[in-house]
Length: 497
Image (cartoon, rainbow, N blue to C red; front, side, top):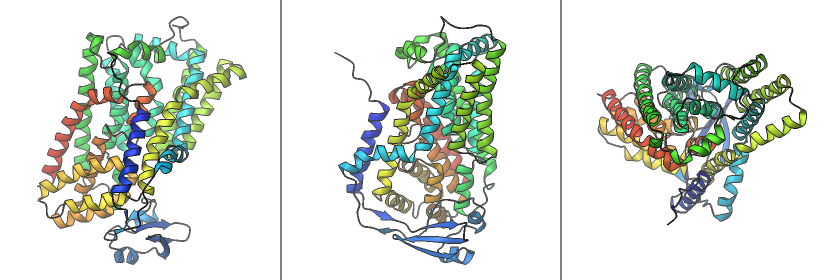
């Protein structure tokens, strides 16, 4: 009897999209009023049940709306998205999403997520050019020689550096760029691709979960809760150190096991397929790094360094990042003296290799569009906030932690979750008698941990690049998720007593 395969990432997301469309027929539609700051004329736009009006941008307006957020958080650009206004939830006319909305959602998602998709395609193009030059193979051959006997350092350094990027400036979607580059390095070090995915994705996820200065999580959530982002930072630093260390140990244990016995690999049945996709071209490999190949590798590496600097210091986003990789590909083409026709073909083929990932990103965004158009996100938020009324401190904070686990399925964006939920959830801290930073922590840890396995987040796009099934990822990561959930619950409980 033929073994039934686990569905592809695209199929999983389409099933989820169909489920969400069905929910819009079951869950009553509802909306909070929202407020956004207009820098051009220094006013607030108030959206009340679809009617938009302009009101003065001053503290009095915020106080009248029961928004406990300092005005400066709006005027200095810290809060740049529409925020939900407490105590304004009302049911609205139902807008259930039918068959036509369902089939249109992936297309709408691809259009809305075009910035991320183009970044992925340009990364693929750059990888295609690199593969044509042979610099990748030569560099990996050299690196595997340097790390011989100390390959574990690759795991420690990669996970730590990416986690630091996640906790400081919100390194998340950008890690998709590192996967095609680092997976061959891990394979050359006699690990499997799962180790590489774990170092990159878990590093980013743990960093984002334990955000310290991440503007897309801690800072915007604290601003939306009306507190200074430094409140509670020492606890987050401790959690970052603990969770990152546990994650590295977890990856090291798995890596050691599969290095001693490759058949213990969760993806052993895909070994040949993945090595063919990412492994070195042994027939044409150049073991010697010539001056030209060194220059090519320098341009390649510099592209990623420039990307990180631009995102963290120059307020760059996907357009600028994609442009850097495009310029890098052209520079490598000149140095390698690649003919124009060969360059176009290699770039197009490289981008084509990641086209399936682009569809995953688009379908996932389409799920969010169905929820938004069906007006059920605010209803879910309103009902979950009501659950915690009258609870004891310890029960309250842990319930909120699990609520954020569930909410992140519907709202996978960290900044989107912060501005939508914090004005509603943070006042609950005052009624229970705890600090609002605890609400921020519940949001960070709840959303962060579910992000490890959230199919509407980045994990399916990440796995899609390496063609690893979601079922195999769940098998690999679930023990770590359980451990981090327990640690988060203990930390949150201790923080309120």
